[in-house]
Each structure stands twice: as C-alpha cells, then as structure tokens.
Amino acid sequence: MPSKSKSQAKFFAAAAHNPEFAKKAGISQSAAKEWNAADEKEGNLKKSSKLPNKVKEASMRSLVDIVQDAELADTEDRTCDIMDSCEDDKDKLNEMPQRFDSFQGQNRDEFVDKTAEMTGKHNMVKFAEHKDYDVYMNKNGTGFIAYDKAGKQLAIVSGHLSNDAVLGVQNVFEIAATASKTGTKGIIYNIFMDMVSHGIKVLSDSLHTDDAIKFWTRLIGSHQVYIVGGGEVLAKASPDKVHKYWSDDESSPSAELQLMLVK
Image (cartoon, rainbow, N blue to C red; front, side, top):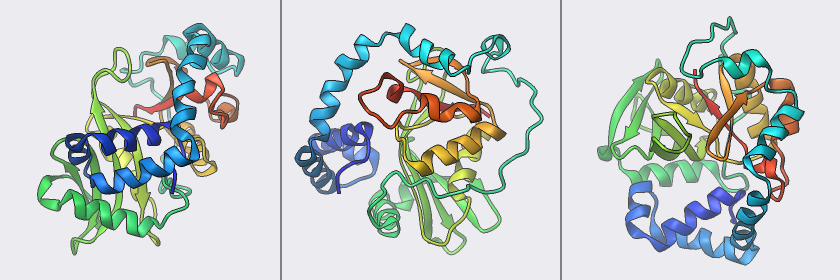
C-alpha cells in the first residue's frame, strides 16, 4: 500500500518517525510505519528526495512560464486580488462528480472508519451542519470528519492549517488525504464549501489522479481557484487548461503546482 504521491510519502515518513506528529495528524504510528516501509520498498522516498534539485533547476520564473504558456494568466486574472470577490456569476456544483480519494487502491470504508476511530469524536468540535450529516473539525486543526445524524462517520479530509503555505495568504488548509465511504455523494465537496464559508482556503495536494483532475476541473469551472507554485500565487486557474499545467510526471516542474480554492 505505497503512497500515490510524494507529499503522502513525506506525510507518512514524518508520522512514522515522530509520535507527536502522528498523534496530531490523528493516525497511529504503527500504521504510518507500515506506509513508510511500503514507500521505501517502492522507492517513493528516494524519488521524492531527488525532486527538490530538479525543482531548483526550474526556478519560480519557470513555473510562471508554464502557467503563461498554458494561457492561464491574462491581465484581468493577474490583477484580480484573490482576497476580493472578483464577481463571477457561476453555477455551484451540487455534488462532487467523483469521489476524490487520495488513497486509491485501498478500502476507502476501512480508511474512514480507522481514521475516525483513531481521532476520536471527543477530540472534535462541530464545524457545520447539513440535512443528513454534520461536519466536525479536529480541535488541533488537522482535519474534518463528516458524521451522519446517528453518529456514523461518512467521510474525512485530513491535512493541516497554515499561515505560511502560500505567501501572503492566511488560513490555508493544505490537504494530505481525503476519503468518502461507499454510497456517499458530494460530502467531500460540501466539506470544502464549509471550509470556504468559514474563510479557510483549500490547497490541493500534488496528486494528479484522473479523479483529482476531474474534480478540480469542475471546481475551477464553478469557483475561484488559483494556481500556486513555489508557495506563491501565480495566476487564476482556467478549467480548459488543467491538463497543461497539472502534470502526472513527478519529475516535471509543473508537478509542483498546486491548486487553491478560495471561494
């Protein structure tokens, strides 16, 4: 069960070697060690360790070039302050087109159940209410869990809140993993919307799976989403150009680009 991205590999490596980090992240250190061992066997950590040098060769100028070459940054978008409303009349997504599951290849139901069990509802506070379920936030800001009205866990979004993940942008939640249980619809999307309504910006992982691309493409088409590279906002995103700047080649500089949902 190796990680599907370098950020996941780094996340589990940190949890495997730091019990305090694992506790705050809401996962067991033994589970993190299993993932870490699988990543080492697959060579994911070795690959990740090589990435910074390649990325250094591609300076911030290169990242900007990638975006501009994809015709994503026109004058209007660049001058639109991401903290402003930038009035756009766009249809809202009623539900997520596909479950955005960072842990593809494993049992999503088991992952949601184990995460909720390890986190403990007593360590969470109610964050938002919906007709059929409520969303709770971990007290230490490391994630969200949706529970139905009977108290059964339905979906999780894990990560961490940061004020320095993106230059000049406060209150950013950087995603580490998401998963929703079989038979659910739109819960991850609604958790994202709950975060945004509370003034939290949602920063994508560097995953480039088909489901992730499809989901974020739909988000770009209906919401304000910005491209982030090297910890800086580069431009406003355009749905018809996603494939040009969100590369599935981890050795490519464009693989370092992330997407940030603002509203």
